[in-house]
Amino acid sequence: MGKSSSLLFLFLYSLLPCLSPFHIELVDAFGTPDGSEEWGYVQVRPKAHVFWWLYRSPQRGDRASKPWPTVLWLQGGPGASGVGIGNFQEIGPLDTDLKPRNSTWLQKADLLFVDNPVGTGYSFVEDKQALVKTDWEAATDLTTLLKKLYNKNGRLQRSPLYIVAESYGGKFAATLGISVAKAIKAGELKLTFGGVALGDSWISPEDFVFSWGPLLLDVSRLDFIGANKSNSLAEKIRQQLATGQYGEATETWSDLERVIISSSNGVDFYNFLLDSKDDPLSTMAVASSNNLVTSKKLAMKKSYSMYLGSKASSSGSLDDLMNGIIKKKLKIIPKDVSWGGQAGDVFEFLVNDFMKPRINEVDELLSLGVNVTIYNGQVDLICATKGTEAWVRKLKWEGMKDFNNLERKPLYCNDDGATRGFVKSYKNLHFYWILGAGHFVPVDQPCIALKMLSYITQSPAAFSP
Image 1 (cartoon, one colour):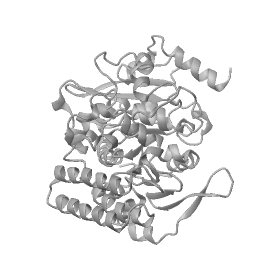
Image 2 (spheres, rainbow, N blue to C red):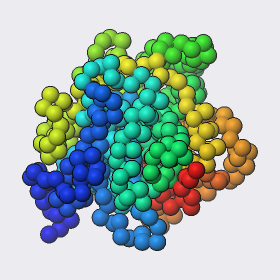
Image 3 (cartoon, helix red, strand yellow):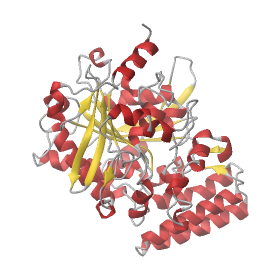
Image 4 (cartoon, one colour):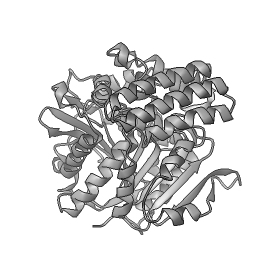
């Protein structure tokens, strides 16, 4: 039986009722008969339920000299589903047609997808007031989930955990990283912490909005008139942030996106070399996220909060897949819970935290000795490399001077001699520039993304208090 046939057989076989003997150890989790997949719910607070899905890699035995790592993938938005988007559209074992993905990150690590925060994907709240209002509240929920998964499971404890985030997920990763490190130090969490990776992450909204006008002017996507309009609104955002008007800054951010779209004739915020209509990832996200528009106020926010959320496959949309055959496979999703049904509410409740920076949290992670990796796609706009470099320069970590003085090293793939990216590392800070990639690095440049993951998970020192 070929690889494709074997995976399809296992997937269909997993539709049969099953509960492995050791699943009780993982909070009454369900899974496949062979133990390669496990999933379940954790009630993190009254009326707040987080869904998780863990894949064990078939390559686990290939790296016997070091513990096999686990990647916790955090999606952005806020309100975008890691269980759906990160899993089936970016790094999981199967794509949206349920065919094997050649570039799955299971080649390098076990994968833990979590629908974070509550209300995202299959995660749900029984009362809207149980939704989180800050990144720190989301971190507390995730830490609660990790305690319940890890504290009584020796196998998981032996696998170093790497938190890898994309987009707004980077803000969650920064707060979660601190929460995890402190919980380990306090003896409340039994976990080997490998580090945090921030991929095209919304760490400093101010630096990103100030990058948009100059960047698009340099690549001829805006003229001076459009760039001046962009810079003017960015300055308004700076003033609003300085005076603590975070909700108002989110509204101005929406205005700024509208101005850029109009002045650029529809530039794609996830790849500035494209029109949004020419990018299938962006187009499908915008076209099919109308269910998120709970008011006119949220109209411009919907495309970012559900980016990539409903990319079409030959068999239909991601919404159809997740609310159809996948929900049937998982068995435990409540009948009245639809995948992504509360995503708009997730964004709305976080509207006053959306524009808050998390630079200080990254500084704290570095000072705690946690491995911090930053990676960025060359042609991303929403979290442009220009903006990422700007907030990295604001870090006050004691190693920054030495980091800044280092030369970058080139990265290659497939021995073809073509430069695929650059990397700079000093102590526990690592920065990857990924050429030819937009916002979704694993999708745009799967080869170098896998190579980068290998470097990240083989870093010499995991966090220890």
